Image (tube, rainbow, N blue to C red; front, side, top):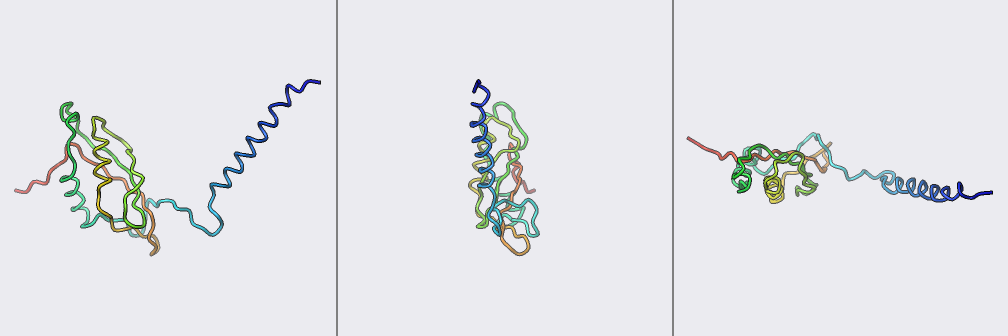
Length: 144
């Protein structure tokens, strides 16, 4: 009798057992809400001073990278980040970038933002995922 066919069976058994136990470890305990971020909330988060202040902040803080200027690159870098329950920014990622240093500059500007007014869902402060396009070159506010 050959044991050649039975040797993979214990390895497969332990692999499947580990995979099933891993899925239990990742689920939230009963009665506890997972710490995920909302996309839509009844009260969305707000930059201090509102949307005009956000545009002003971006125009003042964004520096057009030399490599992008030399290559004539223009457009938007689409960022996504989470505004936590204290109003701090975390989990910054680039959804669509331009390269030439623009992606890194967009991350820098988002990371240095002041604390936001937190978002609320059913009267409870929650984490909210927020998408923000950053324009390159920045469009400076010009008043006549």
